[in-house]
Length: 501
Image (cartoon, rainbow, N blue to C red):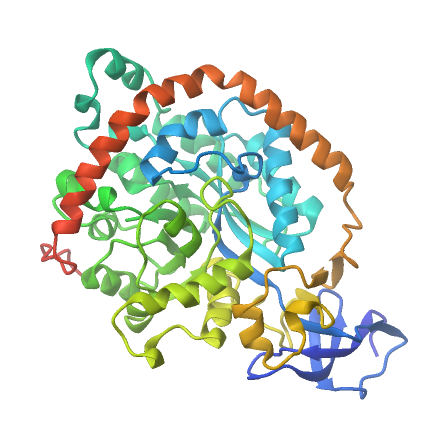
């Protein structure tokens, strides 16, 4: 019998392949699950009494932005374009400590709400650095989460990315927008290359990725550089794909085809590629993603918050695309609650003209938020299930919490009613990172105080940048709404030119 064998007993367990929670013992050795055995049969000197708990696999967040932790509650009636316009003051002038604090705040919220791994597209302005990437990695290591950390990068500003936008500004405002510049491809990609070359974090805990933020914000030279860097070091790639109607219309103007077709031409599609949002894609794009093994990170809360539309995830799934669920960042969806995101993923599937049997049901939604998201992270062989050989990433919910009383159907109540409030303990790799509602390895009161101070200081420092963005905002909104209407007028299935095999 291994010396590190631990038996978790007394709980109801939602194990892989089960349609309902059942009493069972979970045997953990080191950081992994050895076996699931009938309740009361497993023996070990090391025991964890989980009586009164429901144990589920840790939820997996397929798309977020850790930099949003310090930017909660900013902006109300913001479209995506207005959010991008505000980006320089929301994320500007941050120190390494600010990046660390923001990521810790986001990670702590995820852990407290039952999420044990995430795909983080982190903004590191003006360009990424090895130090900045390690600040973010250290934040996840300190909280105890798994993460894919993908610096969010581009070589065009938002104003350069949208065809015709600069010309829409009156002269005085145009000079303000033109004064903003992105760094060169070499200056942006070099530090990511160095981080990849010197990466020391365990690959099953914290992976490095790369995120050309929005295809329109990237020149073809830059996209090719991201592609080649990813291939050289085996990095996963995620981008924001066709998130808004204005992006779809802008792509047709710039490329003469869809965003997905253009990424295919650039040879970016593949098993390591994932598309966040993918609202404004057609059947031909779904076929391209599926054919090349790409995935979609579905972010229903953010899609609704920013008024971008509702992604038809059933259509993507039926087309053979892997789908995971994400929260997006706290500056575009306001929270890191994967229970809420999972519920919305189920509910928004019901607005399309389909019979109820074609809706996303509770069991399927939960699978998308665990196994599907794990596949987006490139970790499907080790997380997202309670099964032998998988990592012991476990969430313990209080069966006496009102959300679960009475427990008529665990899966339906987790998806349709749980909000994270019943989470009491969270284990990642066999180690508790949340125990009876407390963070044993983190001084949360100190972190919270530092985060408040950082947010107040950044508000002062970025006041001038905010003033500039506020002056540009009316033109941005008017122009992009008009551009988006062009996409609304297009048929959903666009007759794009052939893009090859």
